[in-house]
Amino acid sequence: MEILSRQEYIQEVYKYLGKQTIIVLTGQRRVGKSYVLLDLKRELSLNSLNNVIFIDKEKKAWKEIKTDSDLNDYIDARIDSTRTNFILIDEVQEITDFENSLRNYRTEHGVEIIVTGSNAETLSGDLSNKLGGRHHEIYVQSLCYLDFLRFHSLTDSDQSLQKFIEVGGLPGLRLYDLEDLDVVRTYSEDVLNTALMKDIILKHKIRNASFLYNLVKFLADNTGKLISATSISKYMKGRKEAVSTDLVLRYIKYLNDAYIIHKVERFEIHGKRLLESNDKYYFEDVGIRNTQTLVGRDKDIEKVIENIVYQQLVHNGYKVQVGQLQAGEIDFVCTKGTSRIYVQASYLIAGEETREREFGALKKIKDNYPKYVISMTPLVTKTDDDGIIHLSLREFLASGF
Image (cartoon, rainbow, N blue to C red):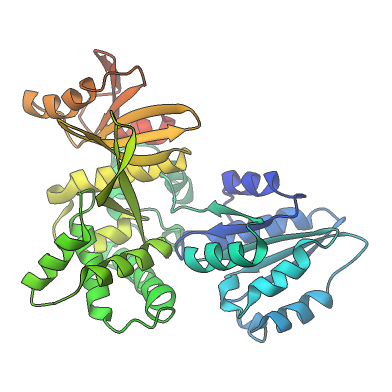
């Protein structure tokens, strides 16, 4: 199958070559890490001075590589001292004690290591401990809107945006008819179930799998709402399912480590400090999120839009937090280096009450950082309301700020 290049990730890899740093492509299962690695393999192989050693642990051709010792034997048999050796390993966490092998090759002259993995705890924790932090993580996201258009040969339109809102950005959907929502939904559910089983249930020997699945549904229903472990525990108790706050926190961490959800902390704007307890949660892919709710998009469109805006802000390189004012809440406080912007996400700005809620909160912030409202209000392209820019969701996703 033709590989559609995602050059932003390839270029990020190139920045860290030649620095004796292990490069790790991380992200939820089935967001396209393997194809980024394959694309990188294709590019590197075009240069005769490169020797590419490629391993895909999800393919039977490499099933005999089970331990670090097996990995060493495989690499040693193929390494070429006369060329630059690129060791590319897909789903490296499937190899027991892989860190020992990577540590050995990291400092070898003429060796570059790029791997993929689907669990933040395994990759960050074990690699940091055994390599002294000498690795760089590149977070690969589900498709952004522009990549969604490119992968499905669509033009930028309201209809294309509606399709993106409904099905999300899993690259594997390219093989399916997006109009067949039953098939699309089944594919997205299968991706979620695989991630839950391999990266959480089996890895952490989960006993209460039913609660894990119920927790995912709860977080889907409450996307973008401030949530505490205590409130989840009380909710489950009301449904005759007794779970402790410690268990809630542990399972949320597992979901976060598997990149299925993302925790966003609160930030007190005037006090400039992080607040404890309540956080917001967004899904890596809105299509997966949508499979976990029973309501139609017309009833939870605000949540989906907020999730999409969050993911696009991260894609644009911002560190994102929830803004807290004494008088209310700002959806997103976004920082990049020393710059900051404030963003409100809404469905429709149709009346004065909604306008006051979205614009009024931003007006209460007494600093000079840029402020934006992003919505699907018809006919809005880019307007200025007393220094606050109102952008259409489509324009934001296609062109940024």
